[in-house]
Image (cartoon, rainbow over all chains, first blue to last red; front, side):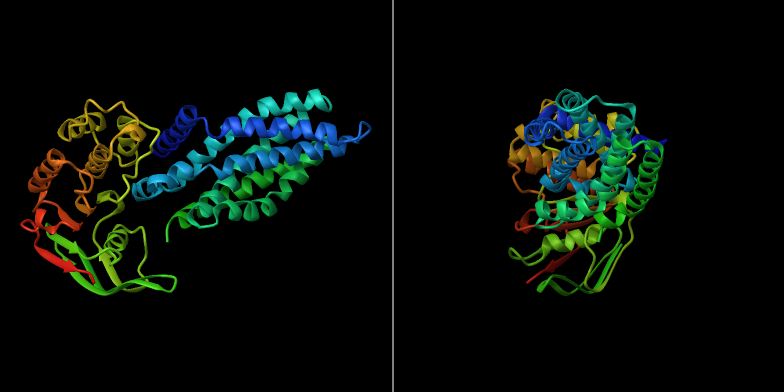
Length: 212
Length: 194
């Protein structure tokens, strides 16, 4: 219970910070909607379902990246991460609290992005919603670990995309597969497996990322 | 409580600390002085466990939760209020009777009226008082204070003097400062970094 109490206190803090500063979610919303508008005009009217779905996933991926770049800004300012790392709580609680915050920001962006996709391209089926939900977990799990790693470095804005994009290629494969093929179950299971493996790896390795 | 033998720390090619030896027993008070860039803050970060030595040995007989660390920065969220910051740290540091302890510290450091103000709107001195509250919140056995008087006005400095007076001998201190005259009467040992 103490561990979960720490996690929820840290997640609540992230949501409170965003409610007050409104730095991240509005930028993510604006980015994802404007990207879908650009794709709407860039694609030919007879484009395939796979192409349209693929572009949605590209938009979601870069929206997630936008949020992750800012994930540890509040901790980097005033060196708050040092204060958190010194606390006697399990350090993985810092990661899990941050993951919950990132997932909440992604969901907020997708609540607008999916209806916009339905408006500009094609109806959204349950397979796409399920794939996006599973992808959010994977993106947040891997992205939060890498954002913490990048926050410690000097070229953090460059480092995060370089580390993040290759690692989330399986999410794009699984997401497009689940939403544009006749066998979504197989791809959803693949996304679930990716989430489980990378969540465990990220949870276990976070301590080594934030300490020397 | 702290023993350092030929302690060294490099950042890339830059050597910040070299062959530092000292010992601080339980209840001791080590005063660390030296010019800018001499490694005072690095030494405190090493003692806190935030950095690892690149040479020599450092033994600190205190767990993470027993260390109170005051850095140059207040280590608090700018967009949270003083109360919210202390409540978060109180939870993470497992402070018993958290609300009472926070209220007592806010009163003692003259922050009660400002408790619901965001840190971003606080003056440098008020933020430093909040940082002191944060460092003392969990009643640590070992206090690592980096320029504790920085930004404090006369009244704030007096409050800190009183706090140090009440804790000295019971707690172990490592204090790095440019103004050693303020605490040298309390010090049991001194370390001058070149």
